[in-house]
Length: 295
Length: 333
Image (cartoon, rainbow over all chains, first blue to last red; front, side, top):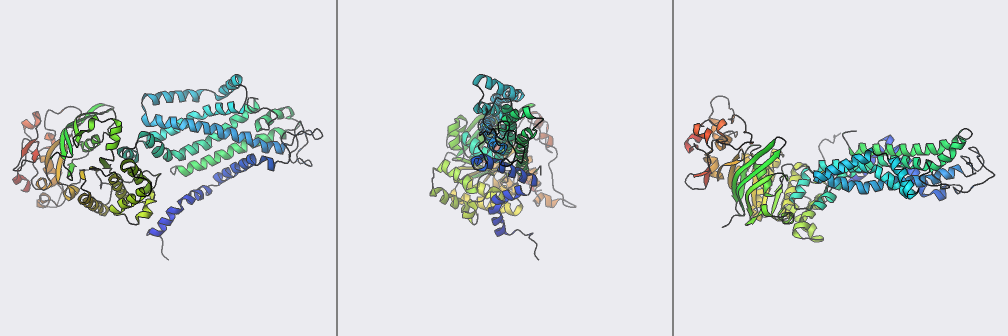
């Protein structure tokens, strides 16, 4: 039997062509990451196909079935104080949750990454100002910001997204800046400069793709924070307004029935917890993937 | 005829945390069209800084004075847009470290294509055809397959070939090779040198070769400039320098080569000659010969007065900055 110690050029070429698939394979070799990915997939499917999946409308109340317990006929997870189907509300509740999580993170990414990129590449006085501002934003309680937003502009999903996006901004600025500072010293960036490539092209064509990994990880780890934040704001009545089904508003409504019907609070709480956990697991898995030194 | 590159009295002052460093102290050199000039010296002697200043790659805080002319155009007076057309289009540079000089996020073809679009204005199918041609020129087999390869799939020697292909893509008049073979193993070195020699005869590109490897110098160069402590100490035709080095430092470098005449004549077990001492720091202007503390023939004059470059030898194109240049006799003895 011949051991494959001598590299076979054909095999190496084939391996290289496979490297795209290899990426997935490596992700699937980490059970926590797989669990995370599965959970994220379930929540995403629930959000997209909510009208098909849920047995009832999330806002249809039925006064014959108020506060029905779990496993009652027709209502798997029971009903709430207005006789609305809890399962349907949970499924529909995935929509605003994901929406806020993704939009707030996307906003922070789209604004924060270019700022960090330019800041880290050019350094200088501008960089110092950017970093001090980022420190201030980081130290500023986003909850207060969100409450202020709601007070001034009225409670709405858009304001929640903006408030959470601003709160998540420093993370992206810092990551992109740190990566830009490290990458600009790379020989290939020097080589690009020597080739006469303009700065804009160096920043967005040469640097940006090389920091895609860390930024993706940062995004995956920011989403759960934004989800928690949105649930919190909804709970406080600053986000989605009743009767819209969201996990945060479900919690608010459930606190009046905490002793008689604890499941009304536990179920949306679990939904928030599991979703957040799954995003975090996925983010950790991705980080391991992009940072071989950690694994 | 006017030389392609003319550097006159180049002075570069760099700043680090502890203050200014005079990294290049009045270097003049020229590279003719199609000529290969080697810039030789040990680490920290200013040879890389000299090369980087040609492309204005030094940090913004660096102070450069003197003049650098390419085809009569003053490179130090260019604005950033003019500089971009020079970089890659007129002067291209190949770095020492092929493992990190290619962008890991793009295929080889993509990176060559960028240069072709930027400096040759090629579009569409012409880009691919030219990229293939360039890869074949630097001796890469299965070039069409390699265009799609990513840097991590290539060996060091292959990557250095790609770097050379990229440098040639802009059809520069001057190619700066900064220690092009230092990071490669010996067989690969020889292959790369073959390619460079071949390209030189085919394209007629002038080459400024920066190295501390005298073997590479002997292999490629027409003319040699020896630098020490930020200054040029000797310049000569390559044959002349290897036969009759005049500066004690250049002579010492040659003696330190394994297999040199001097090394073979040592009695007892063979031992390589070395140059004692270390390179002086370049903080203060020197009021003496920079090499004096390490030089066996140094006199009081060497320690109180810097020697100036002066012609020596019959041809008049051999220059040395030394009060007591070695004669042909002392070297071969």
